[in-house]
Length: 291
Image 1: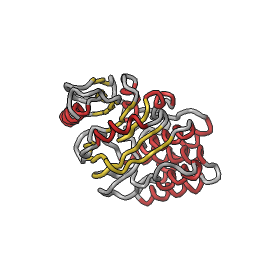
Image 2: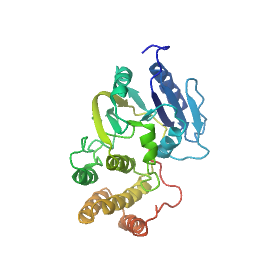
Image 3: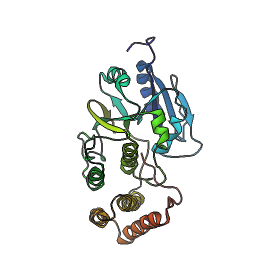
Image 4: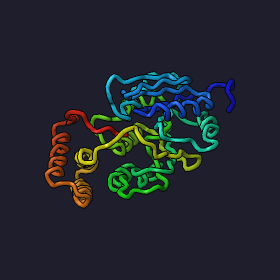
């Protein structure tokens, strides 16, 4: 596309933290798309300042998914592209999106293939879903990629197109219940979209390249695994009471094999049970960031 053409009915939301140069470079590339760009600075040590985008700065660190929720409140276009600051669009992607948007219905949700450095999400069940209950269980059982690799992954929140009103009607990402586990937040949003009549579609080409760049959202392994176990318990119990013991046990065995201490495992399961029984979100203190 060439600057000066008709503006594309799209707002790109990009959360970023401690990567000001990377954010500036991405904004520069996105300016050629003729769309609205909103950068959510997640309380970086060095505030992000960039031309060509609206910059919203969080007064405290919120995490990737909540930052997407924040950024979407400032969007003025009908369609949202939620993407991370360490993604690079493949050639032709801007033109593809320009042609795609007029064909979409308000409840269509589009996920793009991610290639390059990635550790999570490559085993997410391919969309669109055929059977919502069965696909939910499959996503729980196989959605977390336990093998570090550099191959292609599938539907991730790092590259999602959704209508702004539909996203708002869903309440955005549930960062409270699933904080610390981006896959759970993603799959939960898909599930709620599907229940509201949404159509989930996966685009293999064009795609986004995921870079292995320093900075951004760092995770602490021990804390993450506790919250993974807690979130897995919540997710399984709320999905299928019959299958939940198998799903929880299977995921627990995998964590134990990776060296997770048994007391941490028990604590994660106990808190997950407490959340489901009490109906509260169960968050305590500063949870690990999701991205």
